Length: 310
Image (tube, rainbow, N blue to C red; front, side, top):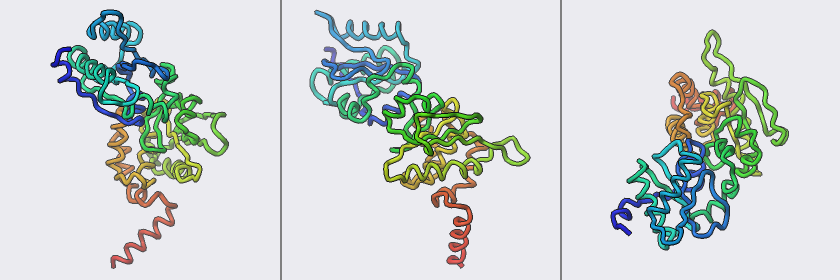
């Protein structure tokens, strides 16, 4: 085996939650290097298999030719290689390094990742991913935190995805009605964005007043609520603003507003906030950092702080 391939074969470990966010973006190359498939394949995977007397180059070229013919990836700069248990030695580990080097040298790939703990670990936490169709994979939400997700209407309608991720509460930021019969009564709310008085701009504070009490109650529920916030297409500023505010108000993340906005973009690049929405959120930051309490209580708290400072 050529030594220069192993030298460029660095593979980065990612957590299962990070993998979910990769799948929620543009499709990318997935090469499964497992010798035995103890569970199914991840969406859009090709399997590295050696035919009799076949070299590595012949095997990987055959696998990638099949991929390009059936489902060409939208993003060639990222790739995932899969093994069984996340080992750094053995035949599967060697193959993953060879695949990483080949992709970097021949396809323009810049980042090659593998699952921390391998397919075995992923199956324990996200088994449903191994039987996910290509269509459902396109509906995956982005995971912003342990219990908060951002997605699209198709995500909210996909029962298998919600069940697999343990999502039991949904906030729909839409300009139309939406009925989700698979979500328990009282765990789904539809909020229509409204405009600021005398302006066409969305009233962000009014939106937060309607959505945050529902989200924060769900996140604090003793039964362990997981919440999906979604707009129509999955990249609307209104839904992103709600998710950003929830990250700050929840408190467990200890993120500032600016950090929360940057975190969302790192998880879901298409969901950046426009300046006018971000500016309105900044006007609410102190309130959000206090956990988004009722306005009267917040005013009393601020007044008390001012009195103490005199």
